[in-house]
Image (tube, rainbow, N blue to C red; front, top):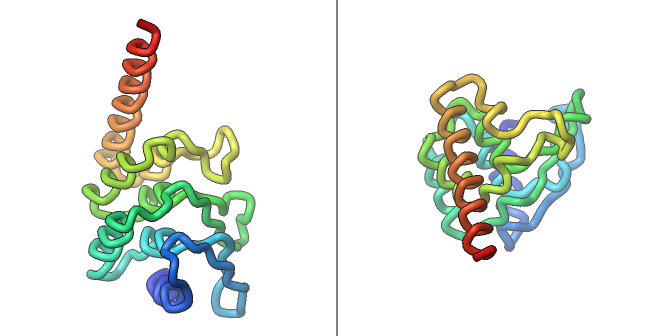
Length: 155
């Protein structure tokens, strides 16, 4: 199944957009664990509806800190935040990627599979240098804002 088909199937069965689902593996696909609609929407690559679906989910303040796990041959690298999926998606509009990063900037520092040394979202975007630099700039801004806040607290 495509990510679009999976997101449609998930959306049909849940009432809470933050609810996670576990789809068992079949002969046709590997399956998913802890998978929410935001994960599916970030993976869609060939749909004109994808930007509007993501805008809708972001407007609903879905939880961007939920980890999703694709059951695949490389299961040790399967656990990702929505921002990892979005950064890896070559068809993801940069405006939506930026909105996601700013809505949950902590994700910018999260490693795939939550394991140090694995890719962070800007590394997931290595297929697009401009996108990679966009995420790096947002990381830098977040670090600067955090230090500025600490400095104000210390005064």
